[in-house]
Length: 251
Image (tube, rainbow, N blue to C red; front, side):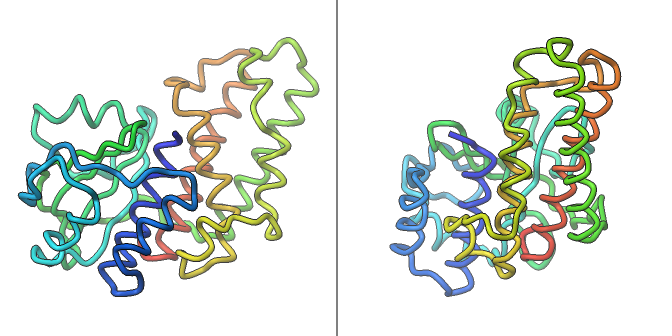
């Protein structure tokens, strides 16, 4: 399971439920329609939801705590951290994640939600701090950079051939180009975004992040010009996710 996409969908559905736009049953159906199981809360250090319990039973606890939104944050060793400090005992859980959702109340962080590949959710206590965006690029600017970098990557793959590691050469370069088309259908996201036309772009950026997450030091991948492009590609994808999330109230 792509945990970054699952974390995004979970954030969007919970946000919609907290705002009264979706019923709990509708939230579950959105996730199931996207081919993802409804998360099961296995650990909860903040909301006393009595794990193990279903995600939907966490909603009343979030409302009682005054949570008004979930914010998506991507994780990678090469990214600056946008996640509040967690307890030392929880850092290993955080280190395995490629994305998390941060619950917020009146602009202050309240907890960090970590979803694993089996749809198990862990609620981690965190420092209560205000969020200050680290990247203020607009969606059009971030999208243009990502499109140009994907095109550069495809050109390098074609030019360098077997000089590029097979696992990098076989990434979905052409699919990413197509997925960034405004005509690409992404029904699982379209109905949840305030700006539904941004769904294909967001999906492509998350797919790139999912593909690049195992590459802990992309700039060191040879040849040198290809490694440089990979590092810029991952940063560009993260910038798109940040910009689109901000435009849609979850970043």
